[in-house]
Each structure stands twice: as structure tokens, then as C-alpha cells.
Image 1: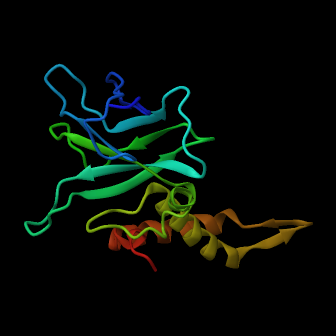
Image 2 (image 1 turned 90 degrees about the vertical axis):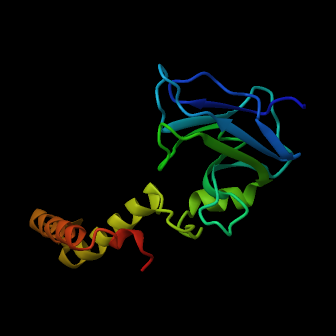
Length: 192
């Protein structure tokens, strides 16, 4: 086996540097066994480049959560893009939604064109969610801010040379926003 490139640390567990499987020369799978009695379950994982690792020019590492097929006819596992690391961003922490403490976790790392990885990191809404996959926290935050901005912009005025929005307008937006979340909890998860 060649020199390890990456280190993974499931929160509260020892570092893992050896991949479980190397399907291609540029892709690596790290199987993390389920929490055993006496060990802590985890929901976050740190992925980092090991010291002195240099990628080929214009490449980065794309990080995926790999899950088993969800239907009987599906032969390939599902993979959900979590983010990336590479030159200038040598490590990252990822939240693993939907992984129970009794489940094993498989992290896939693939060396890909840096432009492709960067585009998926900076524009997560462009990447279409797979079946049952929820939008990222960043996408949800962007949608909340967009909703607030659109509502509050109609209340803006000026005080001298400063643009202001009355606090009552924010309180009204919040009341309406909470009401919509109660009546339609999934509205932020849909592309409008």
C-alpha cells in the first residue's frame, strides 16, 4: 500500500490513517465501525491531510458519506458530498446527519479537479439532493436570510444617511416566519 494521505478522527475516537479499501488510485474508503460498549457514539468527523502531502496541480479531495443502497434494485451505494479539503484548506469538520450510534460509517475520499470540489462547496444548492437528502445547513441559512431580506426590505427607510428597518418589522417577519414553519415545516427544504 502507498503512503497514507489522510487522517480521520471521529469525535472522541483515535485517529485513522489507513483506508479500509482503495477502489482506484485516487479514491479511498474508510470504514468506521459502530460504537462498541464503553466507546462514545459520534456525529462529527475531522478529515485532514497528513503532513508533507502534496496533491497534483489543480486537484482537491472531495469527502463523501457513503451509505448502503436504499432499494432492492439499487446495486451501487449512495454517496452524499460533505465538503472538501486541499491546498489552503488542509482540514475540515463534518457533521454526519442520519448516522446512528449502532451504524458503521463509511467515509469516501476522492481526489478530483479542484474547480469541481470548490463549486460544490461554495454552491451547495447547485448540487441536487439525492432521494431523502436534506439541504445543507448553509442552504437552509441562505433561504432563511433571503426570506427575511425580502420581507424586511419593504419596510426600509432612512435616518440621515443610514438605511434602517423598524424593529416592529423584524418582529412581524419573525411571527409570520414561525407561523409558516408550523404550518409547512418543509418549506425551506424545497427549491422555490
